[in-house]
Length: 116
Image (cartoon, rainbow, N blue to C red; front, side, top):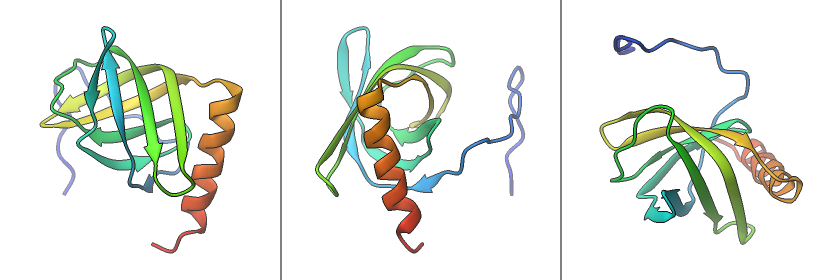
């Protein structure tokens, strides 16, 4: 059952498919890195993760995503928190450098090829 939207929140349609994923890494806010407790899903446009860090929608953050499969690091230097509830955070990637976009695309291709 879908939860009702909180006051001031709006529902948006997803343009990119999301994939369940496992990665480690950090969420950096005000130049201080906080560990990602658990990764939940990933798309070309963003990710959903768990962290003890409490952030508000609109907060700008940097992400360092570490994928064990493929030994891949992806740095997202311009991301924004879209929502935060309980310990989950929804993050939209605002800009990704060409090098890291290529790595992100490869990681997503691997996820698409993996049976659910």
